Amino acid sequence: MNIKRILERMIEERASDLHIKAGTPATIRVDGRLIALDEPVPSQKDIETVVEQILTPKQRKHFEDTKEIDFAFSIPGLSRFRSNFYQQRGTIAMAFRQVPFGVPTMEDLSLPPILGDLILKPRGLILITGTVGTGKSTSMAAMLQHVNRSIAKNIISIEDPIEFLHRDDKSLISQREVGLDTSSFEDGLKHILRQDPDMIVIGEIRDPETMRVAIMAADTGHLVLASLHTPDAAQTINRIISFFPLQEHEEVRFLLASNLLSVCSMRLVPRKEGTGRLPAVEVMVNTATIKEYIMDPQKTGGIYKAIQEGVNQYGMQTFDQALMSLFKRDGISYEDALRYC
Image 1 (cartoon, rainbow, N blue to C red):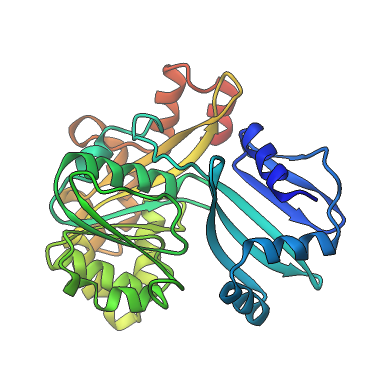
Image 2: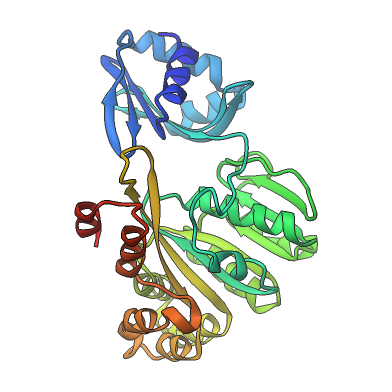
C-alpha cells in the first residue's frame, strides 16, 4: 500500500475523511457518503509501515502505551491532515481528515454574516457547537482569520491537534498543541491569562475545568471562542450547567448569562447540485430575554422560541429557518430541507 497515493486519491475525490484498516479496502467519505477506493487492500504489515513512516519516535511511544493517538501532519504540495491511529480487535486502524493549507473565509463557507460581527466583539464567550464532522473546526478557523485580517489582537489558541495553520496579519497568533506545546487543555489554560491574550481559542471544551476557565476568561474581559459537542443552543446551555456540581448551578447560570455572547450550532446539508455541502447554522445571540431564560432553569426551554422570534431584530435563526433560507436561495433541495428539518 502506498499511503501517499491513497492520500492523493482522497484529495482528487474531494473527500473529507479517509479510513484504513487491515483486510478492508481504503474507504473515503465524500459529502457524508462512504466509498471504497479501488486500491490494493492493505495488510497489517502495510499499516505498521505507515505508522513507522508518519509517527515520530515520541508519538510511536505514546501510541504503543495508550493504543491511540491524535495528531496532525503535512505533506508538502498536497495538504495537511488531522489523524487518529487506534487499535481495533488487536490490529491498527487509521482515520485521516483533510485540512487545507489555506484558511477558508467566512464567505467561502457561506456562514451567516452575523458571525463576522460577533467575532469582532471585545469580550465574551462564543461557542461553536455540533456533532462530529459538522464543520466546527473549519468555521472557527474562518472566524479567527476574519479577526486576523480585521483588527490587531494578541490571539492564543490551544488545540488538539493544530489543524489550520494561521499566519500573523493584523493580529499576533500563537497556536499551542496539546502534547507538543502543553501537556493538556487544563495546563495550557492555567497560565494563559498571564500571556496577555486579547482573544483565547479553545479547540474543544471537554471537562468542567476547561469550561470554568473559558467562562472566567470571558468574565475578566477577554474574547473566548470554543467548540462543544452539543446539537443545539438549548442543549448547549443544559450541557454547560451539567458540568458543575448542583450547588454551583445558580452561580454558573449567572456567569453564563453575563458573559455568553452567542451559541452557533452547525449541521451540513448536501448542496442541490450534488457536490459539496452547505452549513445550516442555528444562531443564538444572548439578548436580555435569553439572559433571563439562562438564569431561570424553568425558562431555559423557551430559548428555541426566543431564537425563532429574534430573526429580524437580532439576526438569530433556528435550524429550520436556516434550512428555509438555503432552500429559498436554491442552495439545497426541497427533499433535503425536509430531511434535515
